[in-house]
Structure formats: C-alpha cells, structure tokens
Length: 228
Image (cartoon, rainbow, N blue to C red; front, side):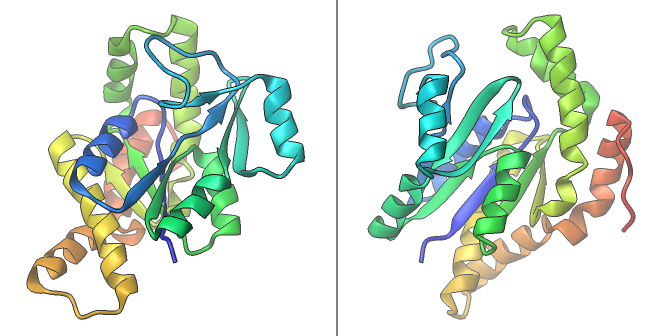
C-alpha cells in the first residue's frame, strides 16, 4: 500500500525547494503534478510544474469525479487527479502531494492514513522578504499572500508534522527523516541504529513537540496563539 505524503505551506515558505531536495535524496517516491486554471508563469511548462487547463475543462473533471482534492485559490482552480494515486499503487511507490490547506483537509478526510507535513517560515518578516525577493508579484499580491499566510498557519494543528524552514539543509534533512521514518514504522521491521536516528529526528518534528516553536511564528503574524 502506497504512503501518501501531504506537504503544505504558505506561499514563499520554500516548500518547492524543499521538495526538490527531498527527491534528490529519497527513492521510490512519486510526485503529483497539480492541475490549475491559472496561466503559466515565467518558464513554467505544461506537465512539469502544473497541468494548465481551462476553467471549463477543470469543471468538467470535477463533474467526472476525477479529483482527489481541489480548491479555488486567488480566483484559480487547483486540483490533484486521482490517477496519480492509482499509478503509484501500481508501481508500489509512495506519493507526495504538494497542496494547500484546503486540499490537505480534503485528502486527510478521504485518506486518514496520509502523512501531513506543514512547512512554516521562521517569521513574518522572513516570509515577506522571500516574497519580495522573488520579484514576480505586485504589492497588492504580496499583501494578499501575507494575509493568506496568517490564516493558513492557524491550521497547523491539523498536521502530523511541522517543519520550520529556516536553514534549507537542516529542513531538507528533517523532511527526509519524516518520509523514511514513516516507511520504517509501517514496515513493521525492527529499526537499525541508523534508522532509529531518523525516527528520532522525525519525532522532534511531530506536532506535539513542535507547538512551542510555533508560538513565536504565530505571534509574528498576529495570528491566534494555541494552547499546548
């Protein structure tokens, strides 16, 4: 049975870079390319970053029940086709979904055993710097993304693991540890000393252990704090 990994993060948190690093380090992992109705940006190519389709085509896929999850974000549809899960199961590989908070909730409802991972920026100031440094969005879009980020991070308690993406190498190692630790746990085999180290790294990122680290981040966004 394939393991489904859900990775979510506010825009600009460095999620895509982390996922790219993960695929360099972990084998037997497939990536689900989302469908979207927005236009390609920059050098984006159809079938690589996204499948770019019309609104009519997307809504036709909704009616046909072809999506595992879908959502409307900033006026555009984004969705994950069920076919990626079927293909992963046929290949006996695991599947990673790079989706937002709305989509993650839909997948967890349908696939309770899915492993959910939320990537957070170190604080609001760092996220704003990253968004501005991309140089692709107008001021209005940046403000909207920051406001959306504040609302999204308040949902962190719905995730199994929390990653604070401050140092890329460290965060990539933590993401790798989570993926491999879940495989080890579900295999039922006794872990080796090296595997126990991976499990310990993953456990440090589990929700209950990460709550204290998240509170200052929430405060920097003016978000509602949560109790331990």
